[in-house]
Image (cartoon, rainbow, N blue to C red; front, side):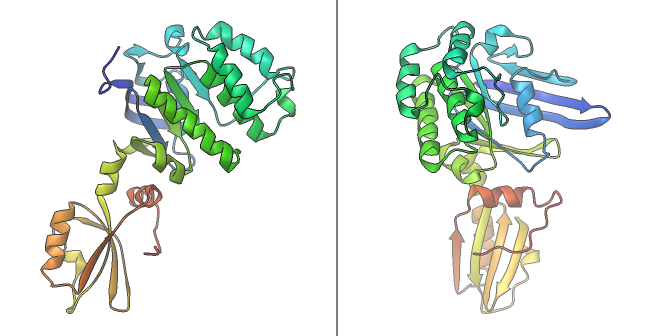
Length: 306
């Protein structure tokens, strides 16, 4: 078994065309074993296309997609260890949870009957009810019920909690985090709900226009961008800042608000040359980091409330 520091999912120079349109433009992505990786990006960035390569639905036009060191496409050994919950769920018109569970037991060698029964009590869904007649939220619960019962080594989740009520969302996240902690499950999640990802992810990759702009540990990602509020006795031209990239600035009265990317100590050293009345370093959310990381790629940031 690979060590916890190894890349369990490794995508190298992944290229994909749909006709003449280049959807993925040489993606390199690395997901460590036993970690939760958040894949974020605007609509049309290529997230679902990337995920469909990782789950073996698409074959790449260039590059490689490896899971546990093996190419994933048409690899039944890997696919039997992987649970995939897409954004748009599909079930046949005659499917019930009980019927689908029998199929899962045949496909997944470590399907856990005891866990299945325990989750039946947790989700409180009639396993004999037709899935097509269920609400979107109930269908998502069924998908998690079956996926978690399958005891997967890898979970790939595309907008996994969309349609779930707040209580069920928390319950599902708790189950995922528990499996990561206790079983070393490797999880890749694509979601627009950055607030929830911030609570569970170890690593984050930002995808935009078919390129992976950045891939970092979540804590490191936040330390690269700084929200600063300060005031000076004298006029200061922030554009003369030597070490750091100014992503945003505005002034309200005598108070200056900045978003600056760069080394924190160097930025503070430069600002302190001008003997500020005060300097406050304010924490950024993952949503703010995302907005400012893609700010140079066609996203105009007009206002921020500090």
